[in-house]
Image 1 (spheres, rainbow, N blue to C red):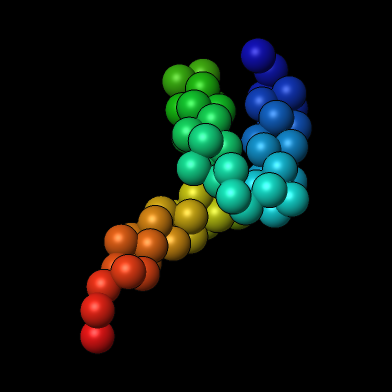
Image 2: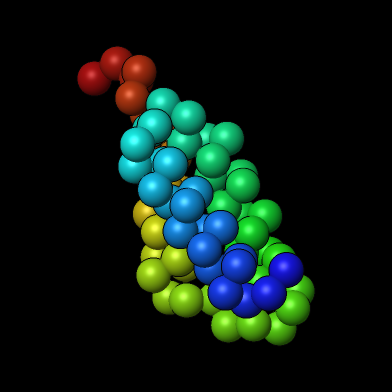
Length: 70
């Protein structure tokens, strides 16, 4: 898949995550796969994609403690 096509696919996944946050774990995996495809082709991964992926992972870490008693 060409660089521009991969970027477009990633952008669509990011849009879907914004529209359907309840499905974000499934979509997050798709995002990781597309970023991996970019890396395998030797293409640079745009920094905003990396930041968004990191933010999603940070949210996952926060979710671990959502049901902890205080």
